[in-house]
Length: 303
Image (cartoon, rainbow, N blue to C red; front, top):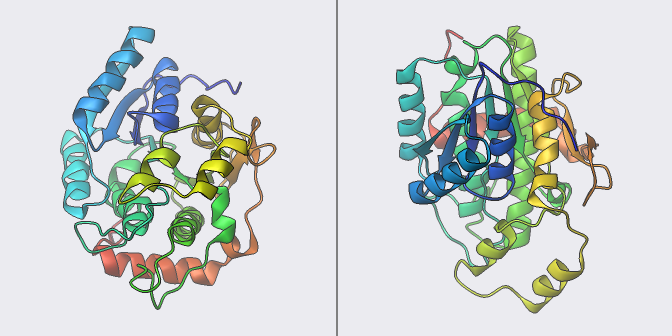
């Protein structure tokens, strides 16, 4: 198991922290001494997770704040609340997501649900929190992507799947977008001389509720999906969180790095190899610009 270094004095935000890899990462960070914000859509579930973390680690400093990544107004409200507090942000873990809803859903802002929740919402959150991140001495942003990113295609003509929606391809696109975002943020940080480290991670095939809840949004999962889910090698949510924790805290993590399980689906955290599509700087830059246009959120000029 990866040993998280001492995190005392650091502030971390973990999205989707009420369950799965998010809760596992938040627990480990809190146990290592970080002050942790559980950024969740349903506060009651966040409070339950907080109670469980504090029961296991009585000295843990954990708070719950609401955010709905499928609602840009909620993202702004969350970010504004943290900025009003004025405390520098050391770690942002973009963990929350939705996977494989069988029918097309839209966010409050009219984006396809997976693209909106998995990419555009985290993009807006990250950019809005840059002032707090850059106030910290050695901030990091980790964006959770997926091995499915290798199957993704960025179609700028129909980024939000208004035609011929396919749940698996839509998920893959959103996760490729996450990988491209992590790498382009690393490029921006380097060009500006920021101390910020931007990395990507994927959990492998972690046993979390993301694969169970998404396919039931508007229908039942297909028989093929249910069979594949049962026979594909899995590891625990705690193991799935390890690449994200490594990216967030290891001294060996590098700018623009990408981390996943050793055997892709399962295993200890190690550097992973992005596909050629995940390394395309031109597509990443164009996607970043499109995300700015769609969300109305841009990197402040004074940073």
